[in-house]
Image (cartoon, rainbow, N blue to C red; front, side, top):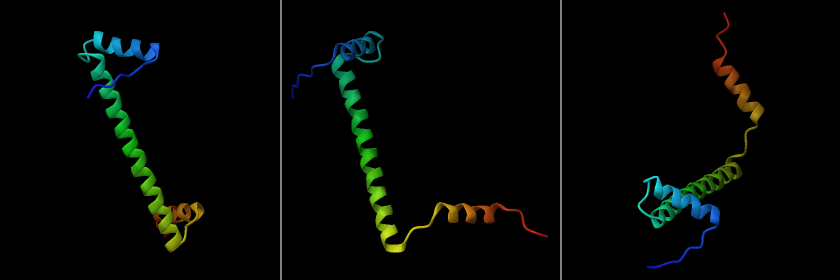
Length: 83
């Protein structure tokens, strides 16, 4: 599939530098690499949003715990035993 991509002068210069440095064989490889990174980033964003929705659903079902309660519980766990 042939697709034309128009890059800003700055991005064009960067892509050509990547090729000149030998990291890529051509500008198309640079663009594909960038798109793969974007694809991975979008997948991580989707997973994070799904996790947030799961947490919201859990809070709706079971209620929330305040940060002060969590910190207090941690203090109790790590405090040395009283003699």
